[in-house]
Length: 619
Ligand SMILES: Cc1cc2nc3c(=O)[nH]c(=O)nc-3n(C[C@H](O)[C@H](O)[C@H](O)COP(=O)(O)OP(=O)(O)OC[C@H]3O[C@@H](n4cnc5c(N)ncnc54)[C@H](O)[C@@H]3O)c2cc1C
Image (spheres, rainbow, N blue to C red):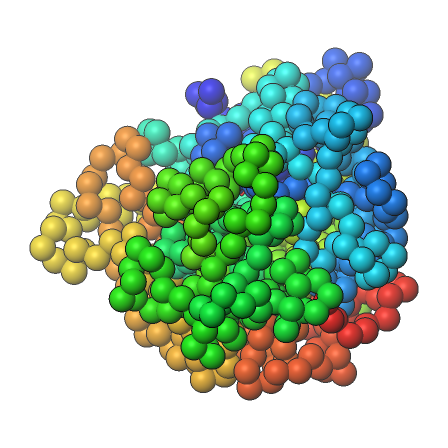
């Protein structure tokens, strides 16, 4: 149920209802500060806004597992998880944050279990865990079972459990409301609130909030082949850019090696953890040449590049659905996995292969290729979820501005994320952000300053942003009638498809300066001007989803330019970023985070190295 009217002022607005947004809401409501407020008869005013019905959030698609050194099935230590995370991220990880991630992981998983996540079990009833790429015991010695799983549907379990807990807490949701603007005060030091578009009615709302948390997920839709659902258009990151904030490390976008050919739909890493092997056109299990020790379970960037090398060397295969098409796939061979176990622990993978490729993984080889999967970079945050701007001597915190989950960058993933670490990131740092918002709210709750009949004056910046947005949407609708037969035959969906194809050809898995320059020129000269001409084809205000698609197209274009700019500036190869013109990692110059803003300025800040000195990253 969405609100019929918005409050004059909220204590907090949470944008996004995936793992991060819901964890933040629970972290907030379960805090001691909120309990104390309620004891005083004060109910905090909080609204969770989501452009989707919350249970459609992409967190629900997560398949393989959530990482934690529980140590129940075999010996495991958080220090090993910490080391693997730093090495997996090619040393671009902020080690204070990664330490926290690894240390708090077991708690986070057990808390999820208590909230109702039905993890798969061992014979003796403990939480079952499986191997995942790059997770090892004893500082890289041997693979370890660290991903706690629920068959191959752990995200579905987590999303539903968190949502049910939020409902039990009475959290207020505005569903199918699309946040169009993030509004800061005039000198960009504090948040004022957001502007949101109610898709059901076509109305625009100015929503004043003392605290705003962005938890809007990733941006896989920048690429044509992606595992990400259609909503992952990088809205939160683009809104931050538009509000004058910087984005951190946007040049690092992870390609997952096993996207199902043609569709890009993810076949979980669990399929290799359970015994699946990648083979080239000659049937060779090629990963042993690229990662002698970890083979098919090396880190994702390593496996994706190996696939690309096989394809470039002429050892790729065509998708059987398109036998005359490009030989840009390799085989995933799951025939060695016991069929009964396959159905028990990989039901989703089996179903996807059957429904979308018409194949049976128990007997058939499955065509796969790398698929855009995860944005390592995002809105820069502290370990308490506070958004900051980097300054010459440190970090300037934006008062009341928070972020969590895939749209943020606390930098636990550095240049490449390990499997299972992002659900953990979203739930842990989401909860922490919720708690830090509670601390701020406790000192000055809105309800305490409410006076009967009195209203909180809206900040001028918020009023202006809301009027401007309303004007833009009105124009999109008003010109709808004249759209047919003019240049308006263009549409947001075609534009997003063209952008994805273009980004894929120029910036996926391997790139160089020439490709990047071409991509930036195409964005500036063609795609961005096209996006500015977009109009709706119907002037209906009710569920006119073309309006949000147009806004998403704008966001994707802005984000693409920022990402390409940061990629161009980093003249080295590290983690998910491989530049063929700078094939080596260059710690002397680039062991540092990039920050890019809407104007295309790039600045740099040091990586926080605590106790793991940069080393070689072999698997
Ligand atoms: C297929 C797949 C499988 C994965 N498997 C795993 C795995 O096994 N283990 C693992 O650790 N990670 C996995 N991941 C990654 C992980 O699922 C995500 O990184 C994580 O769930 C992101 O959570 P989030 O809360 O940040 O974002 P999301 O769950 O994507 O939620 C984003 C929310 O923001 C809202 N939103 C966005 N824009 C707006 C806007 N403009 N206005 C209002 N609301 C907005 C959406 O409605 C949604 O509620 C997988 C990802 C994919 C795609």
